[in-house]
Image 1 (cartoon, one colour):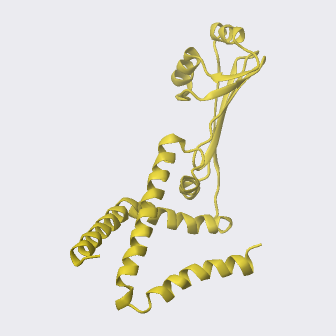
Image 2 (tube, helix red, strand yellow; image 1 turned 180 degrees about the horizontal axis):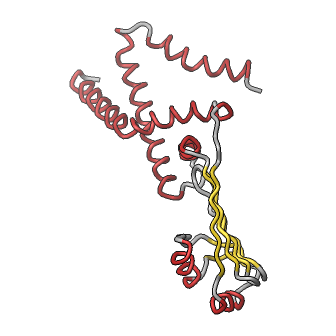
Image 3 (tube, rainbow, N blue to C red; image 1 turned 120 degrees about the vertical axis):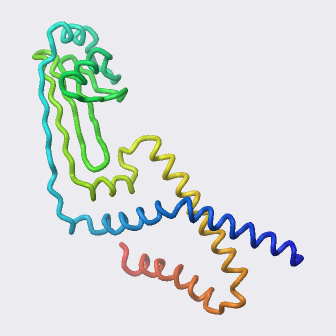
Length: 204
């Protein structure tokens, strides 16, 4: 490779390296910290908070729901969603609920907690329960992608690609500068062998 060609590729590698670093910086810090909190989840005390809301659906709406009851999985009708918003300040969106002849059950998992909604078609009683396990649990679930939705899943994918680009360009830059830094490859080898030996010797 000519000196001009080498200089071009070095500039390109540095460009992609710092761009991928800028994109993944906040994500890497967050995922590193939550990696520690996940690893010590049993040592971090949490006190779940439970909130319960109750209400009784009007007879007219109850009759409307009874007509469409049966074994199925589909979103709540617009009238019921409107009643939940007006009476209980709940937005449930278009998540599919489980319908049976006597009950509608809607699971509402979220990062850092869980929630569910149950509607008794006979009595009209609607019960909502939400459990929150705190901010540490919230960020741990973001790390795992638990119940975070499509947008966060896309973010994790983009972040992961940026980390791959950062790592590969860093490796090539290491190779380009290794002749002037004799400890480069021993350090890279240590970074590879360390986790490998831990897995072989201690992970069962």
